[in-house]
Length: 159
Image (cartoon, rainbow, N blue to C red; front, side):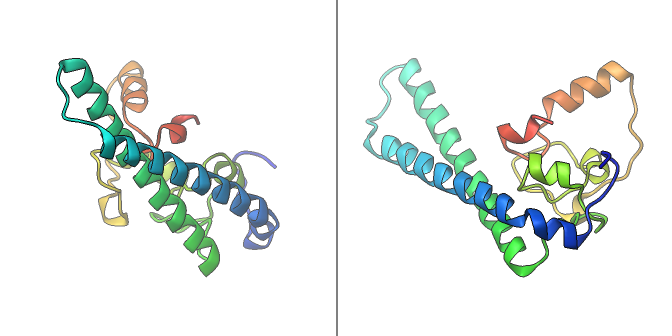
């Protein structure tokens, strides 16, 4: 299969057990990570110096990212259960299997993902897709692509 080929729903169903198992593994990891981070936040005393304050702030941000990742995993498992997994939220085309295997929580095809606004802490929705032409030099485009998260998780940027 070439990268440009899409997977028919029949072929996707052949891969759903492995994708679901991977998502369940990620869910267990994120739930454990979140429990540990929340416990650390709960037992932390008020920071007394800049280093402790920075460490506390990082822990809070990590907990927020773990919460966001866990919500994405839960949403993806719901999409699998309801039979809506594997279709782009923007253009409704089938998402290539290689992308679903790389980022099982993705809900965007590569074309629509390119047109998503920069990550600002909120989840993109179909209404937020902008199809403006990209401008700037190749170097500017590469820099922008490296600076903004593709979907909001650190592991999602490994394409």
